[in-house]
Image (tube, rainbow, N blue to C red; front, side, top):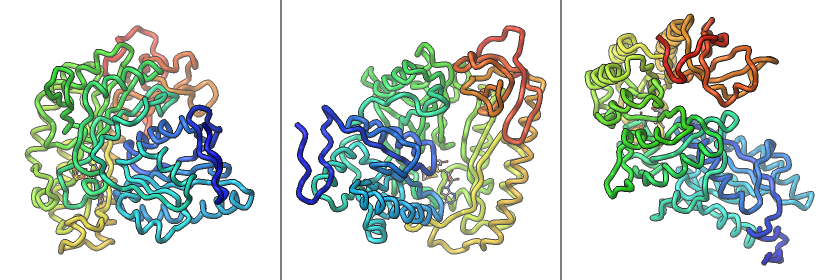
Amino acid sequence: MRQSSPDHGLPPLPDPATPTPRRLHMITWGCQMNVYDSARMADVLAPLGYAPTPSPDEADMVILNTCHIRDRAAEKVFSELGRLRGLKAGRAAAGQRMILAVAGCVAQAEGAEILARAPFVDIVLGPQTYHRLPEMVARVARAGGAVIDTSFPAEQKFDFLPEAAAPQTAGGLTAFLTVQEGCDKFCSFCVVPYTRGAEASRPAASVLAEARRLVGSGAREITLLGQNVNAYHGDAPDGGTWGLGRLIRELAEIGGLARIRYTTSHPRDMDAELIEAHAKVPALMPFLHLPVQSGSDRILSAMNRRHTVADYLALIDQLRAARPDLALSSDFIVGHPGETAADFEATLDLVRRVGFAQAFSFKYSPRPGTPAAGAGGQVAEAEKDARLQALQALLRAQQAAFNESCTGRDLPVLFTGPGRHPGQIAGRSPYLQPVHLAGPATLIGRIAPVHITAAHTNSLTGTMHTAPMPEERACA
Ligand code: SAM
Ligand code: SF4
């Protein structure tokens, strides 16, 4: 039964049986987990009639899914809210309503502050409560006023989410799948343990079921996600516990799933079973994002990373022994409190020793409430800038060298969509490089060998390979 609109003139409560079509606009900042969360929020709202719309102009609901990992995140959110305030007022003047929600880690960290500074926001929700969105929408529609839910509920949100809809990226051919959330490691600089809460893994059966559904709706590649994805320890169907290596072996059995990736890993959680999966599971792509943050033991200790440079290098040796063509990516922070010029030199040295195919590097950004924010020895901004530029120049050169080393090789490419120019198609190499070439659109969704003819800063170009090649044989 549809409920009638109450006295205050708000729109009627959506009836899940016959929902009124409504438009949902989402703006997502931050990591792939936020991309996944946004897709799941859309899934949760679909039974209420909400369907995605690319513009906020006509939206009945706008969700800002925020990231708090580095500074200016909150400023970006407030500036976007300022813009949306006008749109919301315009819709109200036309007798229509726009529900405005702020989700994600900024909401978790600054929920009350958001409502104080932007009282026109209707819903503030943290990353662990979005399964309750329909209830929050109903409360806003019924009673008006703002709803805030930034709790860490006892119930696991995954138990309450509807089935994931079609894969979220690259024309549905590649999909993200969150298997683990939260973090107990408390690195000195990081807000994640505070905004995402304690580490928790989804049961393996639920992950396998979601993966089968994603493959059933067309995904050929799945990237397993977690803040510490390799800390995964999910309840197994056999009553035991599976680590990520075992989970990957089981996922690889799903017919039609050609490629598996995982991110983000912590060096301390790279166990023997996972390393072995790199040797034994052909579907596990030879590209690993393994953040090290610094090449100085002193700074790694100050960061509370609980691994040394020697540990990291030994791990890389083991991984390369398991999968000789493994390409590596990493995260680096420059200018952590206490970092001297010599510590920074040690980071450059580590980069030279490992050789990265690609990497992310950031200036240390003090996050309120984290131990490093109040630590002595804060590094001057100009020094951080200079170090970041030096590190990025080295990483760019390594990326260019890696891309260049692919020219003349034959790489299996998963074609994910049309290219930028007519007659072109685009896809991804096993090493996650975008590949562009002239080719028929009929190849989209397939993996086929491409002869790489040129390397660019962030991508490769090639020609269709004429000789037959095993689907996932990596480059020679
Ligand atoms: N769990 C992963 C690990 O431990 O390597 C990292 C996940 S974190 C969400 C993503 C990256 O953001 C980190 O690897 C780090 O390089 C960067 N990061 C986190 N906090 C930061 C801060 N306060 N300032 C600058 N970069 C930061
Ligand atoms: Fe943050 Fe990663 Fe450290 Fe956890 S392990 S606190 S997510 S950087």
